[in-house]
Image (tube, rainbow, N blue to C red; front, side):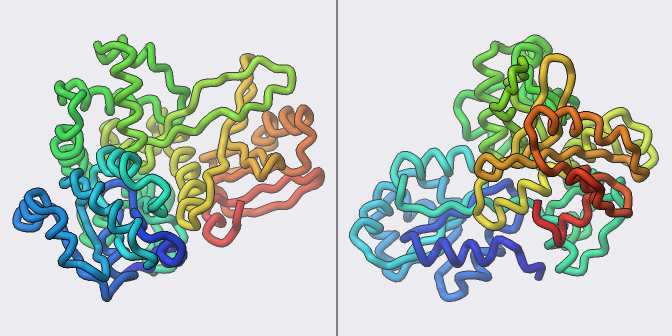
Length: 386
């Protein structure tokens, strides 16, 4: 079993809150993690119709069977239970009493926010990070194969070909999760919408353009974006607010949390196809950005990542904001470093007076240069904090 980096944070949350909720995309190992950490707690899946019917018909009686708490999986299937959980938690002083998880994050988080706000500690569990794969002694393939494979556990522990896994994952997500959300009735159009988003991976979110191409109104597009974001299918990298007297872009950029889904939706099935595909650079960028996100969520830290672009085309891929101390990061998919990689970084550091800048690239040679410039192989994120 691969040890997850989030394990320590989960234990820490359980020592502080009366309940903890593990959220994240489907198939990231949420159930495996909570069973491993809370070995003595009873495990109950409300996907099981017997347990679900009991909880629906007699929620108070159902919960009375677990006076010392339990792991409640797929708990969003019984939304009525949250009000009864609230009563139990309010009357108890025990920390880590209940552990909650579910696969439909949109409904799961909605139910928690309505009944258990302030009583639950959250942990996000995303697909494997690079460091988890290395510690788990998974042989890390070269970058193009890694982008095709993605980072979801079943591709590695069950040896499922990524294209087969992605096809099933998208079908399951749309048919199970999306069907339960009332405002989505045209699933074929929604699937087309996801494919259109894959073509915009690494680009600014233009909801109006998506509405025209999808054939639905702007409010629907905004609603669907919210669903995909809360389901951890896409990540929106927000623009940094600093303008330095420049007119700056204020729309977020879209990234998919896993590159295998982007490759699948774009019809990329082989390394040779990926190497020549015009989206390869954006897919590589997506892989690095989400690795930076995982490093933070696994520790339960705020995701302090932004990007910056002005109207004249100057752009910084990632700005890491350490309480006002800004570190600009450029992401390049090339294996050979070129001086032009620092072009936008030099422009921005002159504006912001930042003391350091970093290029993360696919090459192997790390360099520290004058003026705080650093060139780092992106795989060094395994052991280096940015």
